[in-house]
Amino acid sequence: MKIKILVFGQLSEIINASELELLAINNTDELNKKLFELYPKLEDIKYTLAINKKIIHENTQLYHEDIVALLPPFSGG
Amino acid sequence: MKIKILVFGQLSEIINASELELLAINNTDELNKKLFELYPKLEDIKYTLAINKKIIHENTQLYHEDIVALLPPFSGG
Amino acid sequence: MTEKKKHKVFIQGTITPTFIADSIAKHSGKTTIGAHDIFLGQVRNDLIDNKTVAAIEYSAYEEMAENLFHEIREAIFVKYDIVCMHIYHSLGLVKTGEICLFVFVSAKHRKDAFDACRDLVEQIKAMTPIWGKEIFEDETHTWKINN
Amino acid sequence: MTEKKKHKVFIQGTITPTFIADSIAKHSGKTTIGAHDIFLGQVRNDLIDNKTVAAIEYSAYEEMAENLFHEIREAIFVKYDIVCMHIYHSLGLVKTGEICLFVFVSAKHRKDAFDACRDLVEQIKAMTPIWGKEIFEDETHTWKINN
Image (cartoon, rainbow over all chains, first blue to last red; front, side, top):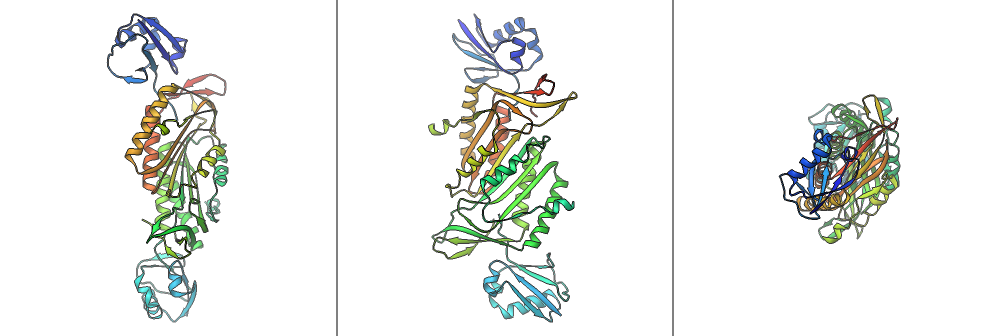
C-alpha cells in the first residue's frame, strides 16, 4: 500500500519537498505520527489534511494510491 | 423682493420651465400656495424645497434674491 | 480639505471601462492599500408598462450635488479607516448596458473598503439631487424611481 | 452547470487594469444588470519585523482550489439573486501595488451584488488552498497570515 503526500506552503520548507510517498500507513493518525517522526518541526505548525482533495477533520482510513495533502493555514487573496 | 425658483426633474415638465422668478413671497408656505395656484398639477407630486442649496423641512422665511429649488424625489445612480 | 473639494463627480455621458481601468492603475503607487471595492451602476433595460427602457437621461442640481458629495465624502473619511475614495456620476444620456455610476473606495483592509463603499452608494442614491429620465425605445419617457 | 466549471480562476502574475476593463466591457450586452460590485485585492507594502514586503509569491493546490471555487460559485448562485460572477486569483509573483484578486459580481439590484461579492471574498479567503509567501526587499521571506 502506497500513499502520495502533497506538501504546500511553509510545510514544503520543513519537509524540503513538495511531494513524497509513504508505504504501509493505514490511517491519518498513523500518517501524522510518521510525519512527526520524520520531520519533528511539523509539530510546531497547524495544518489540515485533505484526502483526494477533500478536507478531513477526524482520523480517516487510507487506501492504496490515496493522495493526501498537507495544508497549512490558507492565505490567499 | 424677488425670489428665483429652480425647477428640476419631472417638475420642469409641469411648470414647463427650468427657472422662474416670483415677487413678494415672504416664506415657503406662501411659495407653495402660489405655485399650487399657478400649477395645480404640482399638488400631485411630492417635492422638497432647498433654499440656497440647503434642504428645508419646515416653513422658512425667504429673503430677497434667495434661490429656491423644487426637488422631486431623487433617482440618481 | 479644500483639495478634496475639487474632485469632479459629474461626467458627460457614460463612464467607460477604460476610464475605470485608468482609475485603478493610478492606485498602484499607493502601497498601503490592500483592498479596493468598486461599485458600478449600469442602465437596465427595464420593462415598464410594456415598454422597454433604451436609455436614461441624467440631470442634476449640480452645484448643490457637488456640495453634498463633498459633505458625504468628509463624513465617510471620518467614519471609516480608508485611504481614498472616488465618485463619478454620469449626466446626459446613458444607454442600456452602459455605466452611469462609479464609486471606488480603497482601504488597508477589506472590511473598511466594503463598509464604506456600500454606505457611500446608499448615501449618493438617497441624498444627492440627481434625476433619471427613463427613455423608452419608442422615445416616450417616464421618471425613474429609486428604491 | 458543467459550463460554469470551466471558468479559469488562476492567472499567472498580477491581474492588470486592462484585464479588469475588458471584463467590465463584456457585460454591456447583459442589459438585465443594474449593479456590479468588484473587489480587488492589492499587495500591500506591510512592515513586518522592520522589513518591508516587496512582493507576494502565490501558490495553490490548484486542482482542489478549482473544485472549491466551483462549489462556492454554485452556492452563491443559489443564495443570491445575481446575474453573473467572476473570480480571478494570481499565482506566482505579484509586486506591492499590484492586484492579486479580482472578484466581480453582477446583479439586477445593488443589494444582491454587494451581499454576494462580500460573501464570496470571505469564502475565498477562508476556504481555498492558496498560500502567499511575503518576500521582503532583502529577499528573505515569511508566510502570509490572513485575518
